[in-house]
Image: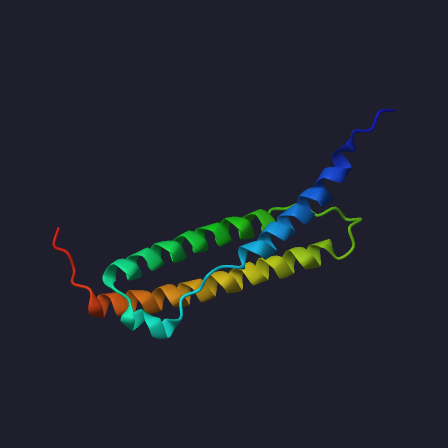
Length: 114
C-alpha cells in the first residue's frame, strides 16, 4: 500500500496561512486627527490604500474560512474561527477609517463634474 504525503500538506498550508494572516494585520495606519490636514490628493491615495487593505484582508479571511481543518488537529477549527473573527474586526476598523476619510473628503475637496 502506497500512501501519499498529502496528509502533511493541510497542516503546513494552514500554518503558513495563519502566519500570513498574522502579518497582514501589521500595516501603517493614518491618525484620524490628521485627515483634516491632508490634501485631496493625499486623501484619495489613503482611501486607495485602505480599499486595497480591505480587499486583501477579505481575501485572507475567505482563505481561512475555506481551509479544511483535519479532525485530528485539536483546536484547529477554534483557531480558524478566531483568525476569521480577527480579520472581520480588522475589516470593520478599516471601513470605519474609510468612512471618516470619505466624510472629510466630501467636505474639503470639490467634486469634479463629469
